[in-house]
Image 1 (cartoon, rainbow, N blue to C red):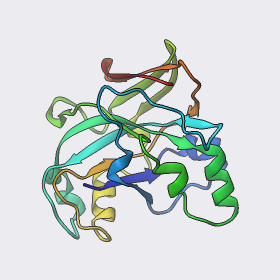
Image 2 (cartoon, rainbow, N blue to C red):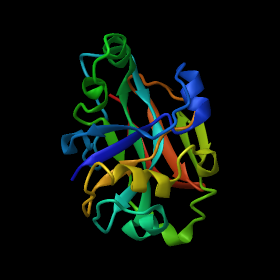
Image 3 (cartoon, helix red, strand yellow):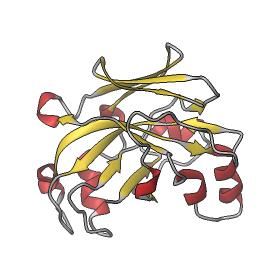
Image 4 (cartoon, one colour):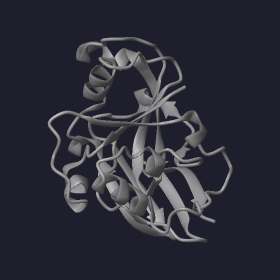
Length: 202
């Protein structure tokens, strides 16, 4: 299983980090060891003092493929979920300033939280609300209509470079409102007002 992540896919989030709006999907990867075991707490790694949450809709690939056409992309996933792309922002900034890859800041153990998956048939994928609260206060509120690149765009683009396999996960980008987590914070994520997971920060 591989984890494909899309950066800067909501213009307001790109702006809040001072990044340009991309012309093509910005892709980075996380190893399978980044997935946080279900039911586990998230432990802030010792190498960062500025870990940020980034809530995202996650696609689960159900049919493999290569060079998938956009009009056929919907046939390659049946379920969606929510995830948090934890980012060591201080480390990421240091790496970016040196022109180096982000993997140390993005792919560390436990940095990919993934909810249970639900059938996509129950939702309007072009107008999908999702949100994150921190200590019962809403910090992120996104809608897929604001994505720069749609789910189908992402699958078609990524499959030009990577063969997609059953079980692969695609994190589709985060809306504005990302921020720092601290010890004892409680994060709760909802899809169309249905809570999909809660997570304690240690």
